[in-house]
Length: 377
Image 1 (cartoon, helix red, strand yellow):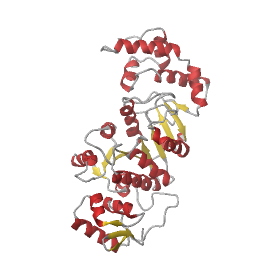
Image 2: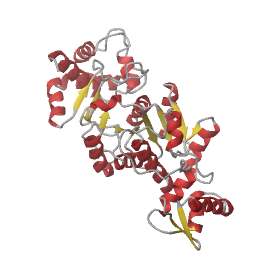
Image 3: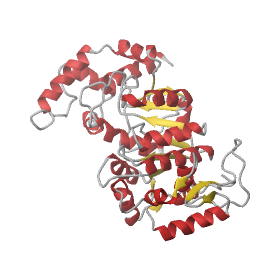
């Protein structure tokens, strides 16, 4: 890194550390064409960049005063050194690896831990969904993550509880490429319960944020993070979503960027699938399994991965979502048919027909009213 690049990174970190500075305020602060260095110098002098007036609203003047104080009190060199000491690196738009060249809301910088070269990994699929997911949704997310990773697809997610975490756990289990995008500083694990997962992602893949170290979680930072998830993905797959929530905000960001959005069909009785089912009604393609996603990526499902995979069962067709759910339920032992009805969300007649076809294919075995793993699983 040149001395000029080091200075530029330090100045960008100062600007990114200003309190309450989200993407919209950042665009406004730099809307008159001032450079990062010029903006900081104006703020240190107790002024907004030329041509700008204080934001409207009761908190506008208070926020600007906070910017003046922060710009004057933060030492850029010390801030950059604190990142180095914590093993966190900084990437700016001058890098050839910068992935947000044509993005409508690019971040000011990226802080990262892990293999920064993975930013260019293609294809990449974001697997997202509600934190308040069902057991079925968590299993579907893990299987999608595992199968896509095994097929050579980079799995992107936000490392939140629920669907996000499950998708990355699945991808890591397949030793695949994982990219985690978080809404805090990389030294502030949120949620704390995902500390081990954060470490696995940074060690085996790439963990990124647009915020300096020390940045704590605030509600507005997570919708801002969602635009980066959408920007990094070729396809966004929503596994489970309620009628409102961050997943649907990510869908909006994906649509704004021309990304493909797919949704996992869910039971009409499950509130956790109300949002995803509505996406299907609105015209999104269904993601019943990894094969559907790979088809949308125009990848040949027979030859997508160059690394060894599990031996294939001859002539097996791609599993449907319901088949995958049933296999996930019985993989650790027998499950009564009555319990599978609740999982599958279909009638007993349809379930029995499905189980019979799976038994003929050797995927499951029947022992009275109990469904067991088959010889070909």
